[in-house]
Structures are given as structure tokens and as C-alpha cells.
Length: 125
Image (tube, rainbow, N blue to C red; front, side, top):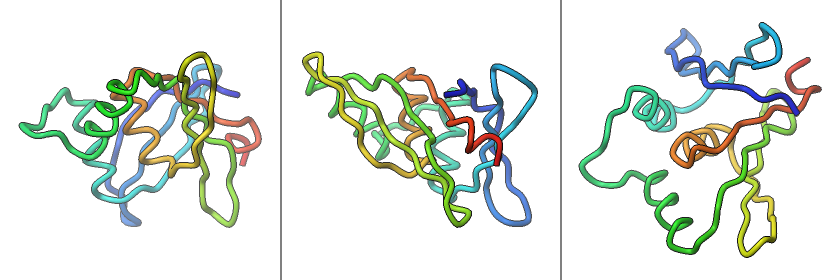
């Protein structure tokens, strides 16, 4: 798996896109996302706090209250121009993988301070 950082969120002529930059080389993976997820990611990048918890903030609070830790996000597949991701969570020493849209997974990872990883075959595609 290739560690990536969220480089930026932009609006293109095809919609919002989040750019994930490899920490191993110069490659950047563009992932098209919806407006609410773009806003959720941009808010963290810009250090903006909402007066009330948004969906990803709420999910993080639930994880914290359940003493469940997000270990990482894995962007693991690309099929028919659709990216697939997993949340890797740990509770009581046990890991579990939860299917998620990459945009939601990234927004949550940023809030949890969890790393985002991309499968090499996805980065190559």
C-alpha cells in the first residue's frame, strides 16, 4: 500500500476532485467526489470548525465513545471508474474492515488523524 496525503480539493468542469499525493514518488491520484464530501474535507484542511457536528464529526464522536480507533483508510480498488475504500477499525485489539466511499473515508481519516493508503494497482491505473 502507498501512503498518500490530501494535496487539495478543487472544483473542475466535471465536479469536485480530491487530489491524493503519494509520499513515495511524484504521482497524484485524482478522485472525483460530491459537494458535501468536498466541503467536509476542505473544512479540515482549512481548519474550519462547524458550530454543530457534521456527519463525519458525529461518526468520529461515536467511534471515540465506543473506544474504537480508526487505524487507516485503504483505497483498495478501481472498477468501472468507481473507487472503493475500506475503513480499518480497531476495537479491543481486533481489526475490522468496513466498506466505504473514498470521499467519506478520507473525510473521516482527516478527523481521526488516520493514514490514507492506496493500493499500488489503483495508483498505477
